[in-house]
Length: 135
Image (cartoon, rainbow, N blue to C red; front, top):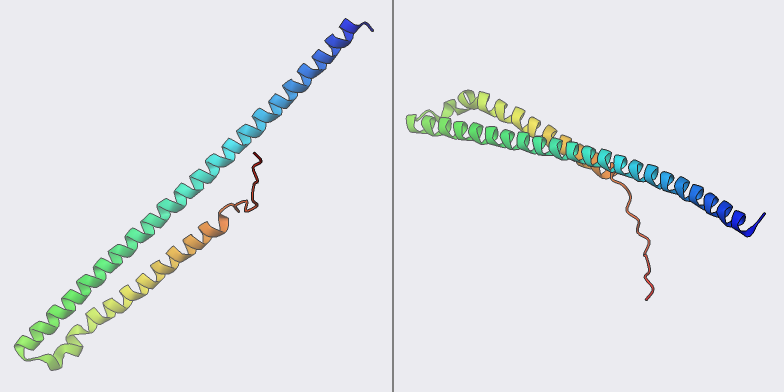
């Protein structure tokens, strides 16, 4: 085999190897991008759900405030009318409503904690090894 034929053969093999390497690189790059999009989509869904849960929690807080205001209003009216002895029977419904709202609030807090724990558990592990740079 002549020198020219050897060089041509080596160049052809190098081109084929480079082509295969480039193809593998592009495939692995596409896979990394796809995985990144999946992770971003999952994180967005979790953030949206967390925001919704926190909004629902704030609505429960608002309902609790309304129930306390109504209870206070009833107590004041009974006081003005001189009927504080009737407070227990009149306020029973509001007290029960407050117990239910407290239970809902506890449940919402648990949902938020569960979602945050799930997000933490599914987070990719960070590479904590130190990368040294040489000057």
